[in-house]
Image 1: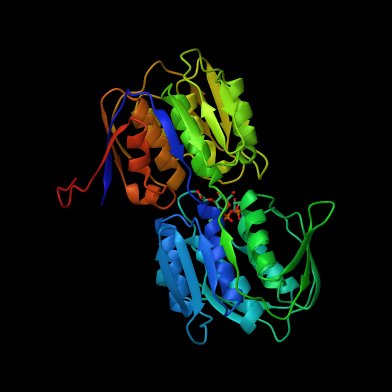
Image 2 (image 1 turned 30 degrees about the horizontal axis):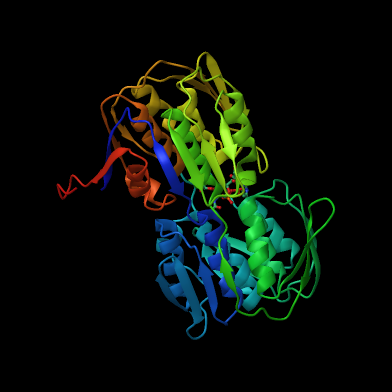
Length: 423
Ligand code: EPZ
């Protein structure tokens, strides 16, 4: 399995161009199941999770072409409405095919997505919503069979603004005659991008005064063309890498307001930023990094996906910072690996206390999840010596051409496969 070898101590400098959002591309790809007509999607990042989603669409019966970040999806005969565990276990988000398949075929048989390193990740909010829409959900042998004689419009209040449940229920409601209202929904920018794509397909969705989603179901949806929004987690990750290495980096082709909280926190920690229409420049800063207390929350709060990269920055603060992970129950796996690199971190339940150190030192570390892996890459970029990051496949799920982008910013990072002794 691939590893990264990183020789640290270099300040990143230059410009990095942000890719399309993984967490918008995945649901938008799934939404093409709502029509048999051709859809064309641009700025689809070439990532492991995207390739897994394309495999799922092909399995279900779509014809796919994918080149230069453009995906063309066409019908290829009758769609299936069941998924094999082999595909679902690779990526939890595959569960989001349930909504479109239920809407079109009144039945979907999907393996329950297992948990993952960051938590149990149940789908109760998804299933309760489908039941409100008139479906029955029977779980047996690790699968869930969701079916309905007739789907009915409903008012659904999500007990937590789950991103996936919002998207799954929204896609289903688009084809249910009548008015469905979704309350306490996720408000992440990726949801807006899904709504934009669904609207181009002919869906009738409006956002109510309290942020509710009000859907007037239609009989059919047609094909559409769409360009995926910039990846706010990638842009935030690179801003943090620039800051931690004391570099001077312009993060281009991004949407600054999607990182509003992070920009505020970076400036409060002492960094100077120049914010443009579609770029953020992190200026070189050699002063003290002030310790902050952050708490992750649904958008527009501090993004849970940036918690790990942020923690790496705080390992170099002056004082003791606090990181409260309030969205997932087990998202500190990067902490013990950072401690092995000389960081001083103690965790208790959802709270991590990070006492800053002068320097991190290179070590052989393992990533356990996508964003924790990026946190270790940032630590390697800062540490004196050569850091080896194992299980790069986690990182490949969400960062397109990562070593190319970092090398272009002056980092010394190489991908290495010890099994093949190959660089
Ligand atoms: C999406 O996951 C993202 N994934 C995650 O990004 C992101 O961390 C998460 O939203 C939160 O922003 C994709 O978009 C593909 P949730 P999702 O449902 O939809 C609990 C990354 O690194 N919950 O909003 O699965 C759940 O356990 C990934 O790119 C229930 O209890 O997240 C969690 O504690 C990681 N029951 C919280 O809600 C449910 O039915 C938030 O989960 C659903 C969720």
